Every structure is written in C-alpha cells, then in structure tokens.
Figure 1 (tube, rainbow, N blue to C red):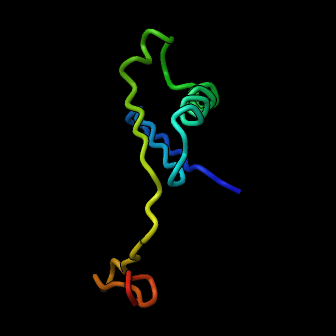
Figure 2: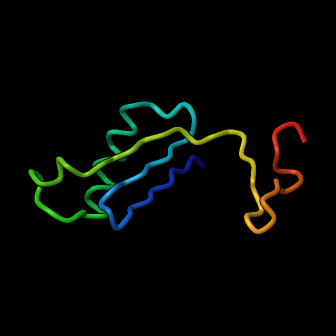
Figure 3: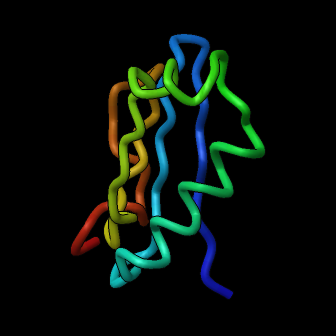
Length: 79
C-alpha cells in the first residue's frame, strides 16, 4: 500500500509527503482531497495564500537521539 503523510500546522501551512515516483496527476487529486478534508481557514479566494509544500519521501533516514545528540545505531546509511 502506498501512503502519503499530510501535516497541517497552525500557521496555515500544509506539508504533503508522497512516495518516490508519485505522478503529478495523483498529487493534484490528493491536493484537492486534502484541502477539502482539512478545510483551511478562508474561502477559495483566500486559500491562494495557503502554503502547500509537496515533497518526495526520503528513502534513507537517520534517526538521532536528541538528548545525546548522537545517531541511533542501525538507522544511519551504510550502518
């Protein structure tokens, strides 16, 4: 199953993360669905100022222990 992550902040910014290789036509459909579900403040004309950031999901992720400021073993590329 392919999934996307949607984050909507109090600053009115929408962040959408899609799997690598997602087609633009699918992103356009998803954008329309997300806007209707989240229903950001304002009418359609007012929504022109809402930031909608789209990015591809990263394949390699490194997790960091913030208290120790160190990479968590097994999550670093090549380890």
